[in-house]
Image 1 (cartoon, rainbow, N blue to C red):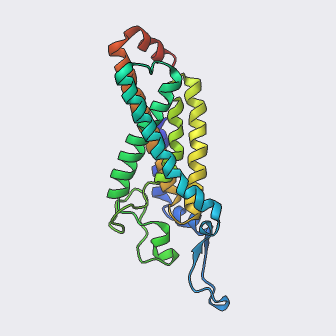
Image 2 (spheres, rainbow, N blue to C red):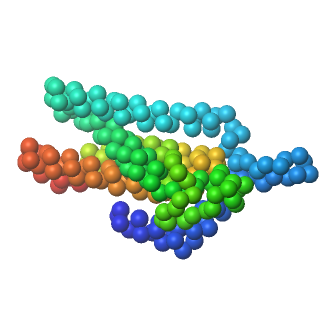
Length: 234
């Protein structure tokens, strides 16, 4: 499923790289000199509520990481995290830390070099547009690929990633809806392209799958019978 979804996204944005510009153009108002408007703008920046959401989302991610670390420390000290409700929030914190913090923000956003929509020439900026899967030098830091805000929304899938197959599917849907909603806001603000949002979801999904696999392997070493029961329910 992960491989097929990546292949689908890769083919979509490789065959039609201009799809990103087309989608972003729906949210861009071109300058109209006759009305005194000499600079274009992305409509998402005109709404106060969107600005609040933009500011609040990273704080949710940071709070999740802090909660996860606190629970991990408590687990190490007292072993109280056998209860499933605590494991859910620990999983969320770990995914936010490793998936969003390390892979998305530290590796991809700092190393891919893709300019944001608001900075490309098509929307009045100085930078050149670059396709999603083509590393670029149009941005030096905190770049467009992939979306960190959307990754925070997608990260909610972690709440169910250590549960049964039904629980994982339910929280996967929650994470997808949250990530796409936040991603739409960032597209409307000119902060990200559509591909930044979709690949962000794929990255977080992959990281969640890897964390779940690591958790199952750890359980297999410590509690072989219980781990076998968990894997058989997957």
